[in-house]
Amino acid sequence: RLAKYIEYKGSPKGRNGKPLSRVLKVGDRGDQAKRPIVIQVQNGPGELVGEGAIKPAGNPDAEVTIFLTRWEARKMGMALRDYIRAWQAAKFVLTPPETI
View 1 (cartoon, helix red, strand yellow):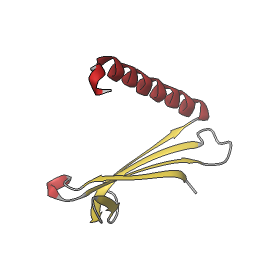
View 2 (view 1 turned 120 degrees about the horizontal axis):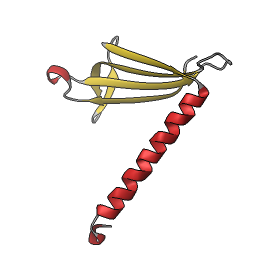
View 3 (view 1 turned 30 degrees about the vertical axis):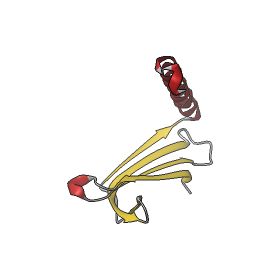
View 4 (view 1 turned 180 degrees about the vertical axis):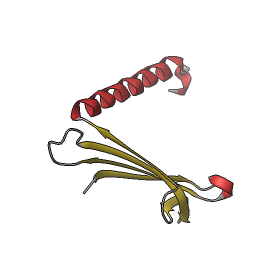
């Protein structure tokens, strides 16, 4: 019951030229526990599907789980939003007018 958001990514030529799968899961434990927001990242072998899609193949080699309070999660989200806005502003300022 962890994931409310799952994103699958990967690289066709990861480790040793074999496909590499990356999975991001973000979830809410649904209770008022001390750390209800969970962010989990998995990295492991993948399988090439279709035209460039990578799906997990087997158990992940590495897994990181981070538990955050709602306040910490909001703070991280706002920092990420500010970073993206700053990047967009810098890109807009540094982009020549003829390419916009």
